[in-house]
Image (tube, rainbow, N blue to C red):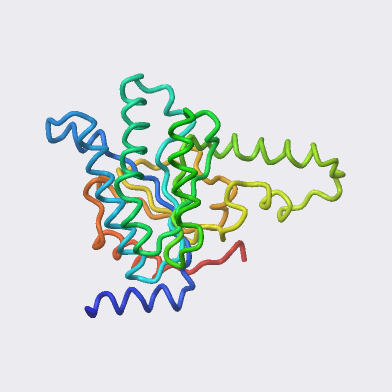
Length: 240
């Protein structure tokens, strides 16, 4: 184990950094800069996710949540949407065995009912196949939008007949897709854009935010280590 890895592990341990959330932005711009079709950027982005997932395991990070497809992404060109759906199905089927062997727990957050039945079956199989693993817990946000998530949480609470005075932050949190995992400690956005893009709005209330101009296909273990080092230099106040 290298000196840098030991240093990063120490930061993760001493700061209690459990959960990293990432907005994986810049696939299309990466491809455009290289005069490649957008599809190549998305494919290279899958490689980056695999590398970052391995780095999370190496550094001792327990939870990784990534933004793969938003509720707004349906507005992209139909052929790109279809490609992203096929890419998810292909990636999960091809990588499932290796992910399982590495102890990864796979889950999906978002409204999966909007996806076709074949894709839903593939995703549900991945969740079932890895549910008892003990490694990094990977949440893939697909057809996810935070406002939609919060609206659905409120609808659930209303349907349960909960009185207004009994509604608490904890109650709302328990109705979200992320109900069984801690809120992110660190939110990383690649690609340089300075916005949240309707991602985990409730959950990142006190998350540290790290934005890098590096496009997602170029983001790797070294990049993650740099973000964690920056996190280690922050002082989290939680409003105090």
